[in-house]
Length: 166
Image (tube, one colour):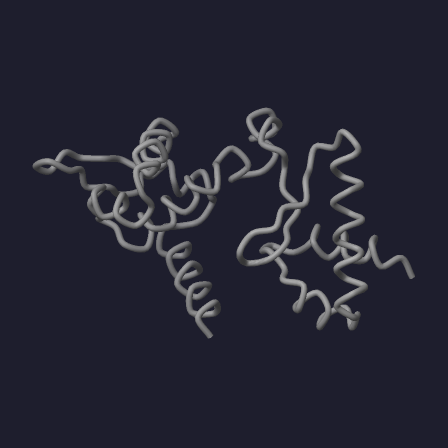
């Protein structure tokens, strides 16, 4: 059995990052085997000119489309045209809307202004002036983009957050 290929296939089909521990448990492999496979996979992807990369996030490892290719493939997969920061900002808006822009900036820092501007430009959120800040909400385009209602996505995000806290 090719452990590297098995780990790669696992990362490919997973809808979220996988920790080394989770990979070991699900595939019934030792930690050293999995770490070697991840290292070999990363080296192989770095050496070759590939459209995807192996990325380690705080949640675990994931295969991700390289930044320079995201805009070109946006029609094939939703979210591929959104940076991680934009996705986090959008998730906050979905769960907490209506929400003040200043609240998001407190959570994410000054980069949030740029994320908000790009999400507005894409038509996924709208910002209405409210004193010295803006009130952010999702738009009908948001639901078309994801193919689900705001409520469905909100329930999914809330379940995910509960699962991560457990």
